[in-house]
Image (tube, rainbow, N blue to C red; front, top):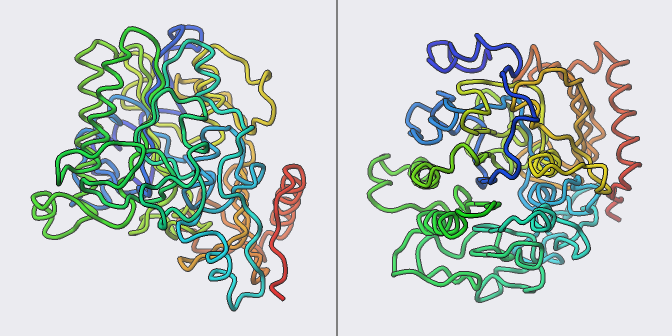
Length: 463
């Protein structure tokens, strides 16, 4: 992987591996493995120690997770912002198909749409403000297989206008406990916490001692859930509010990083990942627990070597960290460069539970369990993004497709088209549309066909 520094010990391990090799097969996995799915909020592609792009960042526990598991170098979020990705993760459907293509605004939908469309040629496309009640979630499916299910942390699929509430609950019926989760601690309409320190003003969790840090509290709740369900299969979705703004961390951590709150927050995230892994180890659950570590979109503070940040359709807005760890099943120190994305987690968990995706309508992804276990005969397939929304961070209000090494982006507002060869140009520096117009046209047609297939909402003229 040329974008990992060559002086890295991890790099030396990675370059010895071809594809995603292992001796394991899908048939050798446990009948009902536990699933721990850690979804971090706004964690950038290179904001982890093992990437070595930001030497100040210290993440020994996440680094260990990578060194004893598999790094997916080409993992993507279904959207450059949070709510659409989160909806996609639990349903296995694209944000475009769900009609939930933008983050659900805390300021309220009417105010948000008016603000974002002001002065633009195109106005914001229609999108929902909650996860539809009739959508089947992976938690509901796993419950039918005897799994205990727990959601701990940020949900952000429960209605708009959360900043005007006293407890983050806009409509209780849209909280995780109504979508298949036995336990819901912290999941409500909030897109960011009212406070990173207790009192939290969150109606789905009790306050701790004054000054208790939210990331620590959620980590403790994750440990408690594992301990309470150690005798039966469980699905734990730990969705941290970290590292979303407003940035905040304990004073001693901030001091350690000379005032850098973001780095301090990452350190606290890492501590709590370590806490979860230590609990699994102490309970002898590592060999029957698959752990997946992921981010809901790109980071806000630079994603070297990628172009762009959260909110953009460039790689920095949608390419994210993904680690898959499963002791003695996923090969330690391995890497996989096959692209995967948010819609793939649902079918992956179905396969873990020995269920066929053919029995579930509307799924748009594929299981990446064979990749994690070392099978390499996976053909290239197109990945799609539909983001008909304005953002101040960069290239947005558009759509994109990646197919093999090629990536095509169309910007709706300007009608500009971009074509990149990611194999040679990971930083998306050279637009190849004029050089390879046929390839651009081919990808454009595929993208339009997909948009038609999912009945994607399109922006209209702002008259």
